[in-house]
Image 1 (cartoon, rainbow, N blue to C red):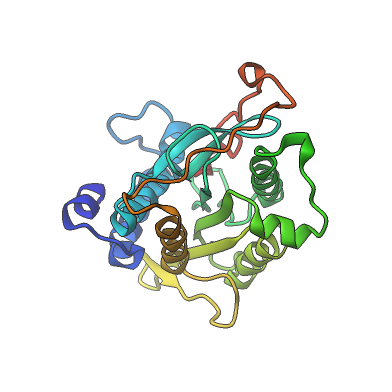
Image 2: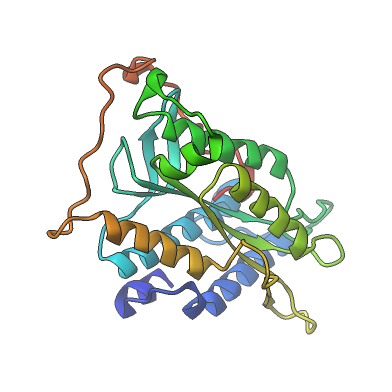
Length: 272
């Protein structure tokens, strides 16, 4: 799928969503059968692969939209710690201007293990999204930051923070409205935008089908948010296509060499 995105210069997720659903169905079939594909040594690494592939796919789509390198899984310096950001532009370790967290959630039951819902452990994911968005925005001015009205500050400060979410809905358990509400609350309080793509087993039981989003909500499709991110990038580069140089604080609250790292695996098997 990644080769196709690169070879055909695909820019929209909708153009590969059927391939994505086929991939998720195949991976979940391995999970249900409790069989590891060739090249994997444990189910933890196998399941984390979903999130890694999602981040890489989105970064390729953004690259095709902007013709600028967008880093997947970029280590970025924050005010109080280093963060592993799923998608960052520019691809540099400090003062990125656009950051995106991507997540893949939900998984079918297998053996004696129950299905993992799309919102499983989301209270922790919510805290992580809020903290990362704020900690990165505090980096430029450190302890000299003046916030005043929260919404004015967070909406004007860099980096812009987005959430791109892919979720499997468990029949009889998950509802798309609940996911939309969670994403909308993040937009209303901490993030600059959120896109969601959800799916569920089809009636025939031989694949997945997409689930439509409520049309009246602020939470939109992945492609709408990818377009917005690309517009942010294109508006910031100069005539030679170069991003603005990083703004480095004169003094930092902590020694950058001693900043703690985001573990990168806090989300467990379903992390993107």
